[in-house]
Amino acid sequence: MRELKVGINLWSQGGTWQEFLEAARLVDRLGYEHLWTWDHLKAIFGDPNQPIHEGWTAITALAMATEKVKVGLMVGANTFRNPALVAKIVTTLDHVSGGRAILGIGGAWFELEHREFGIDFGRSHGQRLDWLDESVGAIRSLVSGQSVTSPAGGRYAFNHLTIQPLPVQKRLPILIGGNGRTKTLRTLARYGDMWNAFGLPEEVRELDGVLRRHCEEVGRDEREIERSINLWVAIRDTEAEARRAWSAWMQLNRTPLERSIEPSRPLLGTPETIAERFLEYCDAGFATVLVEVPAPYDRETLERLATEVRPLVAKAGA
Image 1: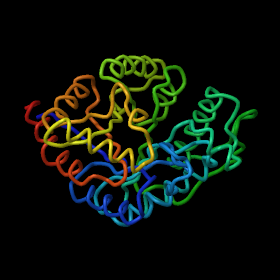
Image 2: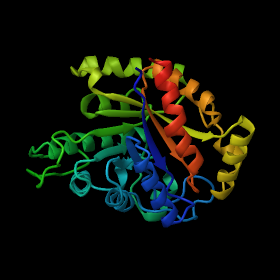
Image 3: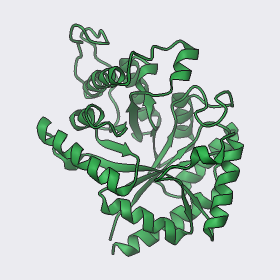
């Protein structure tokens, strides 16, 4: 039997808090493995000034409103916060949720929110990824009960730092998002437990080979890292109906339809069509699918993904 894990990432822009909360509860009731939301201070689709909820506050509230689903940010912006503070925040989330926290983290990319909030964006993408590597290394040590002192010349300046309490989970999982071959995937190989990638099946299969080489170089068993793929989905009885639904959601999020169309997403169509596409990613080694769901958090897609698509994938792999 082929095992497909599915998580749902609720866009934190464009909807009301009550809609957001009700969707999270539905995700939990439907038995999804993960529940995620963004870590952005400005809306990233359409008008940046439309409403958006802050990430850590929102996911902690959702942890209190759910019972079984694992919770995290997809992904936390490393530039926003001191990593030792992040270690404290995610540990608190782990206690609030009864051991359901995942630390999602990445280098950050949206310059506008940094400029408007006065947050240091760094000189380059490469520098931000260097900061990420230093940050994730410190967080891994802190949540494992180790003392951290920063090396001279680094971004951070920890001095024999420890944190208490430690997480509920013996090894709090760290998810790193991104496709960067040289730095992101090496940081993942050194410290991560989950990887969230994006792209067509043949693209992520090739990237997986890069990750395997990094794991070999740092002495890590690559089987310890869970591969997940980031997808957008709309499910209806026909592709035309699914496309109309997606178009309406993009209009609500003040986003031109063409802005939301990429080679690998969205996947639009019947449960059978979506299952076939999921199987392509499973065959590429990505048996965890993280589906982004825009406001207004379409109930039909959430329900049919859980009750129709997953059984079709399992049946195909039996």
